[in-house]
Image (cartoon, rainbow, N blue to C red):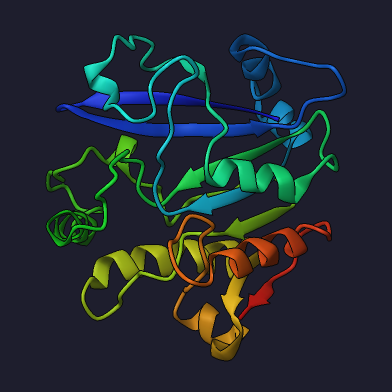
Length: 249
């Protein structure tokens, strides 16, 4: 499997604005130019993208660069271009979960927030996101650029036959009302308006209905005593096509 994406930078921040997992055929390697041909037109996307995974935020590194250093402090200069990314952390888990069932096909990965920031859960940042999302559809200026930071939640059309939600269990509707509304809109659009096959991993004692109501979907990268159980549930989910929701405990 290979991973490709487009990075953008603005105001000393880095954003991942698109990314795709490619499931190689036997003894095959492709480059960014070949990847772009697979998504060149809407017809190509419909043919080649089998599904979409929605995460919370990205932490990625281009191939050939140091994952432990801030990208802006390195000599990376391919912003706004499709480049190959390292298959690390949660990407590796999805690689193992999906195995060889999608050879020659793509899975698109999108994020609630495109900002690449290790401390993205800091209250100060979440407050900025919440304030931005309160005025997202107004004419007011948002602190983070609308197009490179956020999804168009009302009009999003995920590609492929499934949408797998893995943005975690940390969206607090009481503290961050507009972040919650934003995420709720994305989930309801996918499931109710577009009738997509949606799947996720949820805490068994909370029930699947509760998880949907509160949009709490386990993330492979969340650090907890349940991490191994979450990983196993994700793998079990992808034993079916389209994947199905699975509990962890």
